[in-house]
Length: 192
Image (cartoon, rainbow, N blue to C red; front, side, top):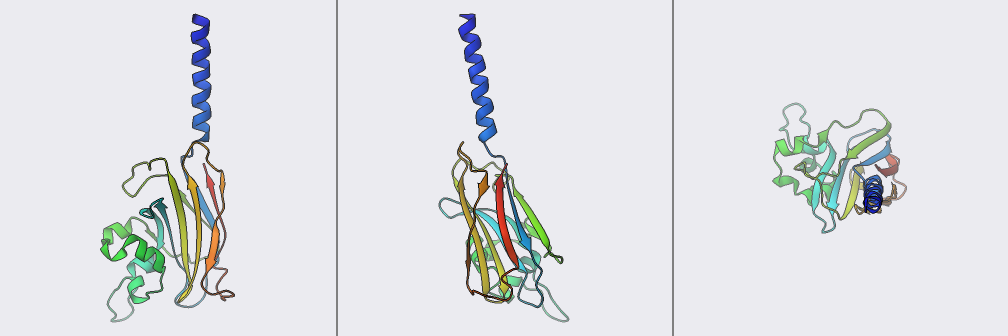
């Protein structure tokens, strides 16, 4: 009897260790960012949606998009209001007009001034800091290349036990051969 019980304990331990090893605790998203010259560029947003298309968390949005910029006597207006083509898919998905400045501050960061690899990590938590339930999720990246020219990257994955390690993004662009199309490239995501 002791021998059977010992085998069961060992088997349960191995099963638990295997299950833990397969379960992701985060997703690391990286891409090459090439800073562009001129106004109407260099703005991007990264967010996660559930299988029903509901935004569960915005991971990052550039500060001009959410806070705008005032020059001289101009009134400070959120960037997406002043420039309606500033990451419009994200603005619509999160219902940006319904978000307070404090809510926007939670995920807003400075627009990078230097080119290089940008990395954002999603800890598999929603906007309230709660672990998301098992399910299918979509990671979205949208960038305003130049005024109305937009590039989008998207990948979908499941948080089941069979986690895919390297996630592949699909790319869509509104204007092929856009002079700024290299602003965001080499988009990758790795589950950890």
